[in-house]
Length: 457
Image (cartoon, rainbow, N blue to C red):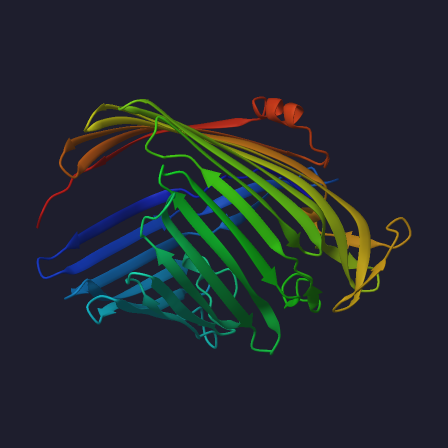
């Protein structure tokens, strides 16, 4: 087994430039280019005293060019190209065009994007997404959306694409009323529906939900919703080792909030449902406090409980995919604050505490798409993925930003960032212990100053 002695946390930028602007005729232009240096890691192999070195990130150059032309009536059409060029790797290019067209007195919008990617010979792929929206009207709003990602499209060298090999359609419609009557100021009812398939003909998602929001005369609000999904095929979970017919349960949520114009604003929501043949519960609370006009503070704790959810964990001795049930507790606490010294001088603060603990238990082999067979890992060998062991992860991220707008459109930012994270290999959750341990984890501090100046050319 090998282990690292020195591993860089990030790449070093050798040079970079950015240019943005807009002409008087409504043409927006943006150019971005960055070159990153080669990064190496030092490691040793157990039983070997020699220190080895390997390149983990080659010398690279990244470029993005964007142009957008405004059209009468808030419409536009645009285009973008990107390139990622690395030593000892195939060059990756993308080209796209996008549009947003208002018509019939701005009541409707036709929008979309077409993308082509090329990561070398025989890798050219296409994707497009388009939607027709009804965005105005007294009572009825809605849209219909279609997307298409072929099997070869891939822009992950410079961007993010969670998957390809997918096409589908979705729709959303809303009935609303702004007419004040009785104790009601506003109400709506939303209907959503969607379905997606891959190009092998398997249904990946199918479902819908019905939800509603009501705002009362005193500006308090409440909302609720119900979602139903159908069992669907998952073609990615087993990491290329067959399909899994995943069971999806129903979801229900209920929430409410007070008047957000008051000094103290409170929001709360609870969600329950089924996913991955298991259950989950989510509790959300948000409090915003404005004691004076130039100071605002908020706290938003969230707690999620996942129980008996099936996850792929590895491959068994006979080559079958192996699943286990996960029990997971997750706590996410966000704190924000802003103090305004003057209209052009502010101090902003953001802190996030995050804890997630998970315990894998009850192992099964997937005999076919929807048939699990229990196995005893004491006698049945399983090659478990390193990412599928019990875990207890905790982190703290703090950002403090002093912003001074010394000239209209031009500003200086002074930033301090403190980050801590650590992971243990036990899966039990204990809030007081885990929260306390955050402050004893290794930390990184970053201090930077950013200066920008706005001028017309």
